[in-house]
Image 1 (cartoon, rainbow, N blue to C red):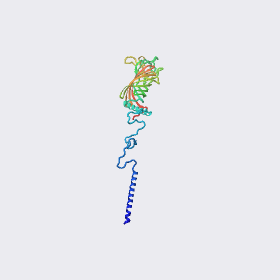
Image 2: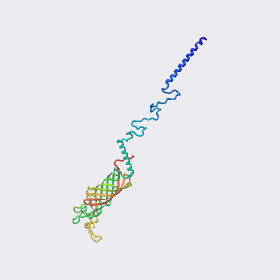
Image 3: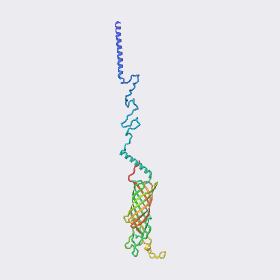
Image 4: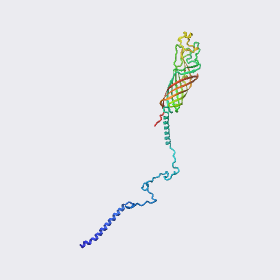
Length: 341
C-alpha cells in the first residue's frame, strides 16, 4: 500500500504535462492553417488603408473599369484635344457608299418610270404605213417616156400619192429617259401598172421601190405616266439614189384608142397634153433627205411599247416633199441588267 500511494503523485503530474503539450500542439497546427491576415473567429476585419490600391477585379473595387489608351476621362466633361474627330473614309468606304447611292437611284428610277424605257437600254422597232403623199414641181417621170413626136413627157407639179406601202425598221440606244438615237431603214414599194405600153426609144419601166437609211434622233416632249409625246428628226441618204418615190397613176387605156368618149371626142392614149398615160410611173426624190416628225408612244411594259408618228421628209436634187403616217411596235432590253435587291 505504501509503495502504491507513493507512486501516484508523480504519475498524475506526468499526465497533466502530456495533456498540456498536446493542447499546445493542436493550437499551433490550427494557427498554421489560418490564412495570413485573416482575423480570428468572431473578430471584425480591419479597415483598409486609405491609400491602398485594390485590384480592379477585387471585391474592394466592384465598379472600377479599365480605361484604354486615348479614351476620354470619364470624370471630365470636356474632351481632350483630338478626341472625337472623324477619320477620313477609306476608298473601300467610299466605294461602298457609291454603290449604296447607285442602288438607291436605280430603285427610284424603277419606281418613278414604272414602264418607260430606262436609260442605257437598247431597242429595236418595226413599223410601217400606207398612202403617203408627195408634193413636187414639174418633173420628168422615171420611165423617161415620150410622146409620138419623141418629145419627153413631164409630170405636172402638185400633190400625188407616194406609194401603197412603206416599212420602217430601226435599232437604237436610249441615252437618257428622254433622248434616244437610232439607225432607221425605210423601204417603199410602188407597183407598176401598164396596159399595152410599148417602150419608146430611151424609155424603161419605172422603179418599183426606194430605199433610204437615216440617222434618227427622238426626244420626249411631254410625259404622262406611260405615255410620251415625242419629236423626231432624221437625216440620211439612199444607196439607190432615190430616198422616196412619188406615184404617177395610169389614167388611160391604149386599147380604147379611136373610140369616142362620153364628151364626143376621140379618146387618145397616151395624151401628154392632157397628162394621160397608158402606164403608171414614178417621180423620184433626191439621193439625200431630211425630215421632222411628231408622235406618241405608249409603254405597255419596259420591254414592249407601241408608237405612232406623222412626219415630213424633204429631198434634195430634185426637191420633193413627202408626208407619211407610220405606226408600229418596239422591243427594248438592257445592255447590262441593273441589279435590284
